[in-house]
Image (cartoon, rainbow, N blue to C red; front, side, top):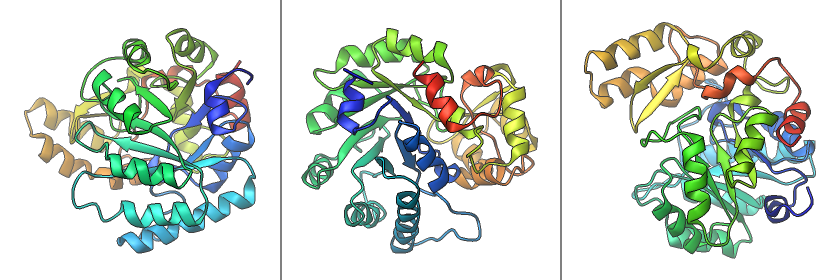
Length: 325
């Protein structure tokens, strides 16, 4: 897209970035997004299943190397890898970052949690390696936006409460957070995240000051997605009113109906602690069981509130075209 800073910075044709989606990404989906002109992003568990998952940083990094190489075989366009550093005792980031450097991946989605995870030395290391940084704080504020920009972020993601996955702790919808963050930056462009699934919501994001979109839920229901067809059909049939909200660590989650979701909502209403809820939820294991294996008795199905705009199981290329129409 001409005269679009997101496209110019990332070397892509259309300002659409696919959210990392943890277990739900793989080389096929990521390459499809990049081939369609957007930027695909490999999540931390990309391509893995319960049987192939590993537990050490080195082994996890090598699994990421395998998925990066698979992606390269499917596209010659830019794609990214998700990096989720922690402020203390981080044994995972160095191993993954080494693979990112060795495999010459040029874009990182750096996920922060508003808790000191903007690490200037890590930003410096990424910049020294020629890596473009898309900074996405789960709890975006003008303050951490400016801090990330000063540290060297090339693009900022403004995430609203409308999104899927781990929700912000501040209950501000996309329509409120995007202009707030767009007004906070000095020079870098902003991506909008949360509830963006079609040309109407994408146009609204641009009108609010975003120069592109960061989308997750809409890619889960695509033909190239690795989730079961039965789940894709449920997404197409549902809308935001079908989703249940509950507290957990760090803040909130929402999910389509299921046995585990019903239990979590009941526990929340009964006053269970966030830690008790998180233990029952099972963390990202619960996401894998619910969304990759299609088992909503023991897992959850986390989606954004905009799913009512997903009307069919479409190709990735059609989705990217819709988001830039």
